[in-house]
Amino acid sequence: WGAVRMGLAHGSYCVGCCWLLMALLFVTGVMNLFWVAILMIFVIIEKMAPKGELFARVTGTLLVITGLMLLVNLW
Image (tube, rainbow, N blue to C red; front, side, top):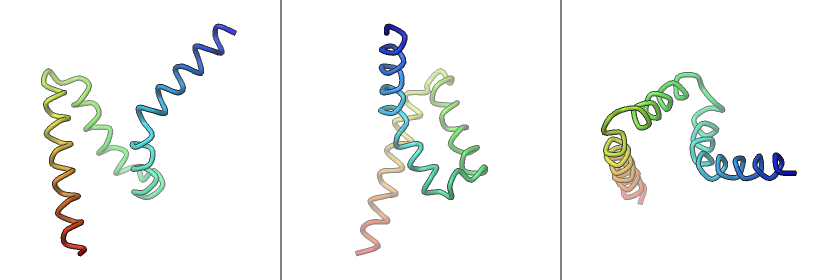
């Protein structure tokens, strides 16, 4: 039961961590290889670069601003 409990804990962490990424992959063409590669590059930079956290924050901020601009233009 210990392995099952550990697997459930790890699985719930993965779902909590990556649900939005999986939703993005589904929306962008049911896992289109081009978009998967683009997202992979962002994740690699975020995880492995010396200033990966800064890169993630800047990228996130730019994506939020882009989304808000698109939302304003739709209204």
